[in-house]
Length: 442
Image (tube, rainbow, N blue to C red; front, side, top):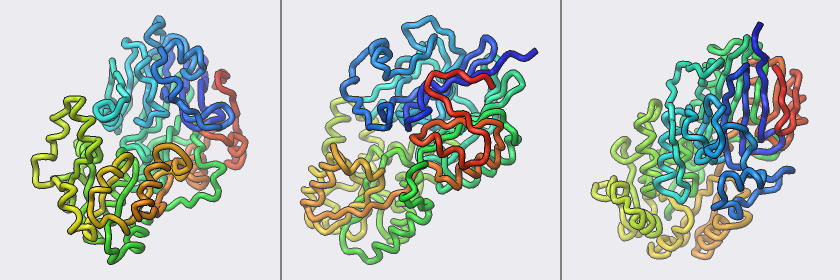
């Protein structure tokens, strides 16, 4: 007789971000994702700053760290493994608290992105026991067989997981979409490799409730830039996440058609060069790999890396022909697409003639309402640089969610990573809505 296979969503049943799921079968337990929360219960934005510096037990007492017995470094370990779907902080941000004896399974791209974040930012993540899985392929942990499925997302090397144990199958979507460069292909592969009739589908629903939001494909976004800025006489400034590789590809494609050089800050250049060493990264736009790419060195980023003593990272491109200085830019404003973000307004003020340029803002519009993003954009506008919001989500709209449901034909559909669990009824299958901490036997 097979052991019961149970699901517990420790966080994510009614919020976006901070996902954490437990699967148990017999004596075996695995956890999928361990992310920092983005929201308070109810959906209000969570300001994490008051919790910075708290110990793991203190974060647990505050309800910020999920209450998962046997996972953390101050506990007796009783979890067989932690699986990380991708590198975004709301899925991987609490890795520092994991017991060092517990293996952490993740893709090569995710491992590299975590290391880059540790190198360049105050977020210092310890990966004590990493295990890089292969794709395509599978691996076993205790009673579980895990099959990673590559998906398209705004984080390079994101994976869904198909998990078998006790004669049951559970599919965890992670964050995904099909309007990126590999999106439709990955869903086609899932349709080919994953038999329909899974017992449970845990599916993200970030985009539910955002009916007013336009979802462009990445190629459409690139075309919009080209159509909007043919013969534009000043610089095109790009403000995007330095780790959103698909977006960098879109802007590179646009720069080529506009006959502009793509001028990456050296952090973004390093991200792309590192991921270029991974499977699937051979055509990423970084200096020395593709033509028409340069690198610049903003003052604040240089000073930060000097304080860290990371001359190896500074010198990766600094002593090459790819470097472009601020002094090189005034005569080439109509020939460059320049990557910027806070607080690079200090550098932009030193570039003669920068007024009249345009900021291509390619992040969630909510960031413009307050904080350093709003302050940065306001400063640029005071310099005569207007913004153009040009963005598309890293998450699946309703039609794509429906495609995954139709492909997998789950016996039960579980809402996760969403503010609108009630809207899952539209997908035409049996929905099992849980609260955080509820256990469900498949």
